[in-house]
Length: 190
Image (tube, rainbow, N blue to C red; front, top):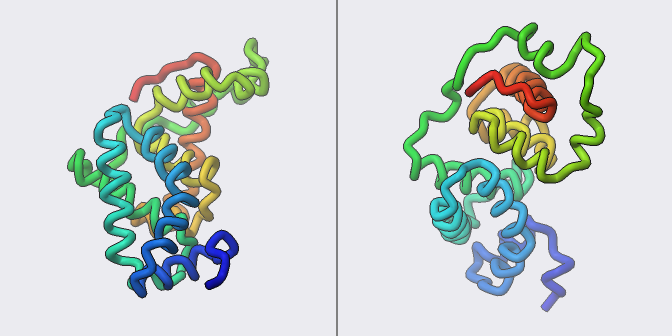
């Protein structure tokens, strides 16, 4: 029996599809932390986070044979977890929260101004980052988490969110501007 720690996610899922519970346990151990972090930052409802996480891993166990490897296993699992969480909240995916002109977002983020607050210093402050993320709209928080925290590619985000790549890039750009504005203490509302 090969060392499960040395197996790739694809190999673990293939073994899980064949009924290997220990392989799936290793997959869970490998991805539970990042998936839980993603869900916690996506919503303010802690009870729904644990429920969505449990539902996601149960669905992943049942659907391990359906994993085709077209994206990373992490992207596949996050997609399952995201859908589980959104089913609980009955939110329509892809629905914009608001429409703010790009120029206004740029000003709020500090473009073209001599910032009074050192942004790099604020980014080093974990509490400030957490507060800024918490004040963002869920769709902004989600795209930042997927791209900048979880490191998913633009293409993986597009598939996961059901959007075109240009829409993902635009949403990410606006979310980064809103995040920078929140770090500077500018709250334009959700």
